[in-house]
Amino acid sequence: MKKKQTFTPYQIASIAMMAALVCVVTFFRFPLMGSKVHFANSMCLLSGLLLGPVGGGLAAGIGSALYDALFGGYDAIQCLITFASKFLMALICALIARGTREDSSRRLRVIAACVTGALSYVVLYMLKTFVYQRFVYGYPGDVVWATMLSKLPASLINAVFAMVVTPLIYAALLPALKKTGLLDRIR
Image (cartoon, rainbow, N blue to C red):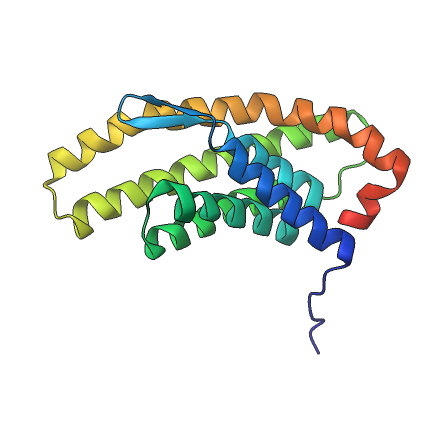
């Protein structure tokens, strides 16, 4: 029989706090070449590192979808797509980082997790852009590729920022979370 996933009060509170942080950080954005540069991806990856695959995925997905629903002006389908893609970004990051030990390879594994998670989101975002442009809106191929190329620089800037900043924030938070015993309670 399969074990049912349950969350402790610490985990629920941590998921809610990280979801709120993801949502708020998404406000700090600026337009660039037909897209927007923001810093929410770093918080999505941090959610995965701190809360694990499911908890981190929920925090990243809920926070991002909440922003899209309340402040982004997106419909329910786009909010669900945002939830799924941000959930997967944090999940991938957490799965790669899982099982890291207290040695020098831990840092490399966390960096690899952040790089893979951030790049997976870029791929998912480009896929969403392609599907919407081509099949939902019915634009011709050259317009679709031009739109995708216009969104790629901002997406890559978001990814690179997340790849650089997230491991630094994680390294800064980890000792305090371990010392207080919170890390074991929120995972």
